[in-house]
Length: 169
Image 1 (spheres, helix red, strand yellow):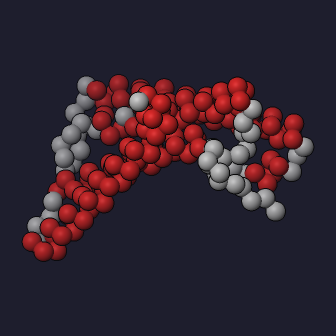
Image 2 (tube, helix red, strand yellow; image 1 turned 180 degrees about the vertical axis):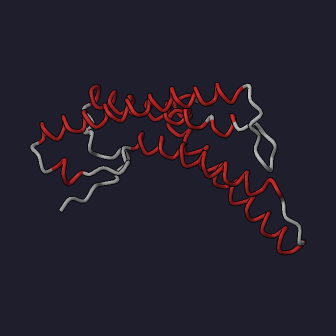
Image 3 (cartoon, one colour; image 1 turned 90 degrees about the vertical axis):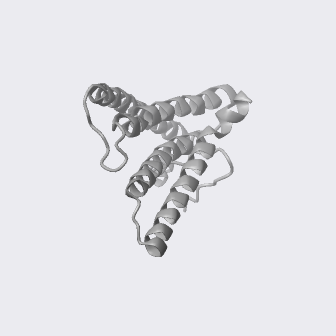
């Protein structure tokens, strides 16, 4: 069970969030068009679903190794240089992620005692904002897993996980 969750957590949560977002928007549009009544919380909830699915999708892209990269420049160098450039860029990426985890938790800590509530739903803004430290922490964990696969099993750092091949001309 843990292996399945570890392998598919982001995909499942993103799918549920996107389904929820589409359902909420459709419900809101039908309610507004047919019954002439707007639902105050619907747009806000759909936005939160979109934001959370985007951040979790970024963690999924790290795991699958399909984040956008400037591979033409990297692959122009010999293999050892390319590998070290990937190490350097990933090290900078981890530093950026850890900075956002730290700053994100500082933001949540600041919001914890303050009455920052959303306009339509009336919920504390700390809950929607919690995705920032969670997602960047998850991206760091997923990047560590990529390197574990690289050092343990010899996986190429430039090749996506599930057959997405890069085209280099």
